Image (cartoon, rainbow, N blue to C red; front, side, top):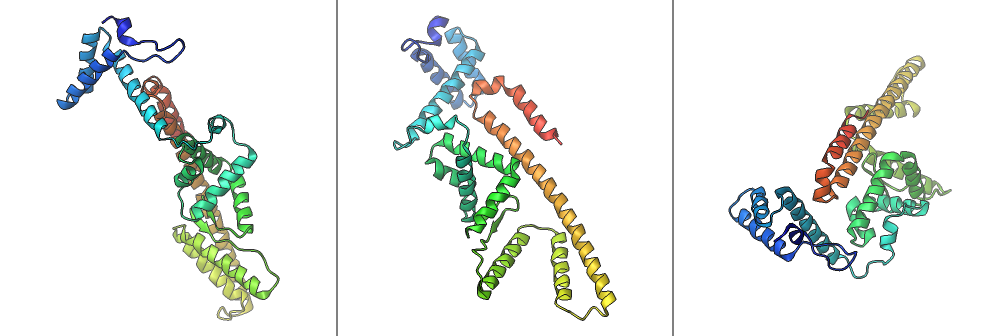
Length: 303
């Protein structure tokens, strides 16, 4: 067959071109032989090139594009018939402020119930893979780049008496409930606060936290009038020392938290780069490999 005949045939004017059935048959035959004989697939491409008159690299590109097309068709067949007809239009549009808040809020509440980020995104997207990825990427981007926005939203959720997940400490925050005027209500709120404090401490592993808890205990003993410390001057000095220790520990924890946030942002950037690369066709992966490596190096070397 000629090169022109081997490559493509037009179905209708303006529609996507497809490989000739004869070339597709040759490709399947030679690739099947290579797999049976456990030979490198490049040998199959060379055999197809000899039979069709095309270059082996051209055969390779069309073969992987064919596989990618088949995978896309299988994914399209799995999409539910009840899919929202306006969903495709929304995928390319930026999130509105209301959509952004609703998404992050639902993600934080769902994780407090034990649901994963992917599970929540899958539920919200009704199984649409493209929407799922869009929701996941938006959530991770907001968590990494807008910590103040997320913290404000967590406080808002807590104020409503709803359990909320803290993505920075990986802890489930126990809701405090509404403040009541009765002493019983105040005691209940205090218990909730203590429970929340204990849960947050358990989620962070470090010797410094033990020292912090011990210092708070000693400080509370002094505040309650504990007399084991000796005279008033000695008690005052010990109180000052405890305050200094707590201040140093807070500074140390802030430094560790900043470093952890920096590492988390780097990880999210790496995930974005890799997800973008994996979503590309095999042909685009080959042509964009140098750019992909440059982006990886940029993520790895940024301060």
